[in-house]
Amino acid sequence: MKRTEMRELAFKTIYSKFFNPDADENDVLENADSECLQFVNTVLTNFAEHYQEINAKISANLKGYTIERLYKIDLSILTLAVIELDYVKQNPKQVVINECVELAKKYSTDKSPKFINGVLATMYN
Image 1: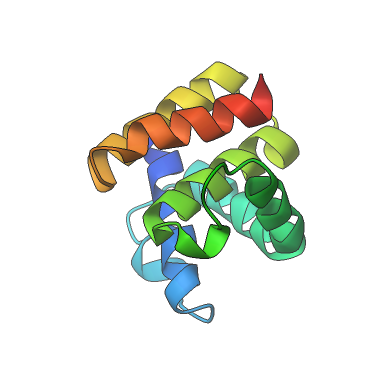
Image 2: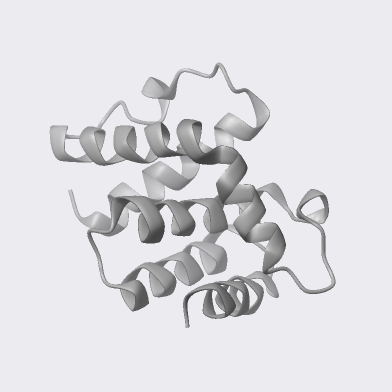
């Protein structure tokens, strides 16, 4: 499975956790291979362990928004990016940012890709 696909599954899992923290991620991961499962588990472990830090970092870099006002899809994408860039550190910054923008194009509003890119650029440039 490609990293792009693994990242998308990790995003979907984070998104589902915002609505049901006790959700079983096996539904999202039923066709995932062992490499993907390891990546998603690493992301989820960091999500659980560093949730407050991640939210604080995102909040500190929002202009004209509060974290509570963000679409959960956008918050999920930003959360994934912070986890990958601050804790997992397996891929180049620009790759992670670009793929998160692509997730926003696929799953969120027309304005979200620019918003996601702007927030991540502020955080990581």
